[in-house]
Image (cartoon, rainbow, N blue to C red; front, side, top):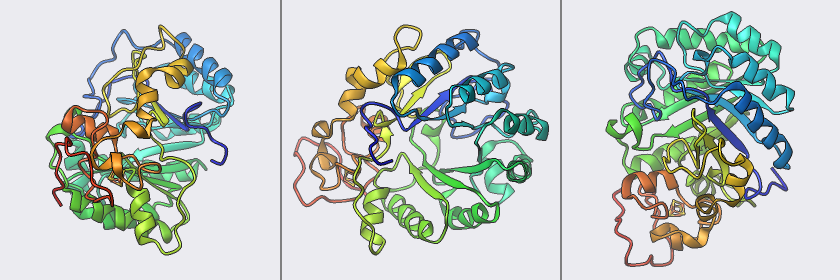
Length: 355
Ligand code: SF4
């Protein structure tokens, strides 16, 4: 990512094409619904946004089409073709339901999709199916993962981390290796949407999980990412011998990352429900580059509490989504991080470390 200016273009764009989904996952950020919303962006509107992306972002982002379940849209293949035709690196993140068949995956491979992301939250049916509230989803997810590999597509495994799945993280890491994944993204669940009522992990457990991932990443050849936990970079620097300080800021809300919802609202993240505008009213590129919300979230001088004085703030900055979900303040310190900076924080910060 050398030469990437995160103020000019996102590195990753996640697009919620619909909220319709056949599952009722316990952590669902989207509060998914059984039927499609008639106000969803149309294919023509989506094509218009793709043109803006291709024209006005000097380095185009990685496109991740998600939901709800994107397979619920009968024009999904046309959307994927438009993205590939625009020269964009295109990934799909479907739900594993009876709609996700091998022929569907074959069609995506033929269209030119690069990666398919599948969610597996625990290495056993008890953990995963309990989390997804649908018996049989674990076995079906393993089968689809094998299909994705057999078709030569990149296989990303997404794992949601909360009190229910934290104890099985190491075993989950083994399963990711066994499946031959090309990347593993661990989502540190933010208490928003249905995830607000899930059992939480403590800052001490968050640190333990990040230390595990930092060590795990040294032993595999694929990318390991911690979502909504940019302090992964601090933990890596502190625990991995020879780790070098990154030269660019962390990819986080509005800083290298942007989320479009099913009706065109633009958010700094799917976990941060504060809209910066709508693609029906202004170009995505302008919202990303110029909106006050996005600019403020990229400005480390606005951070408060421990994040505001932290020696790692230029490469971390904490999860703004979690800060907002817990405190209502976008710039508050990340309550999941137990790090005590060398400098004293502003005494007006209301949060205390609970390790
Ligand atoms: S205190 Fe904030 S900026 Fe520092 S490592 Fe923790 S989350 Fe990151």
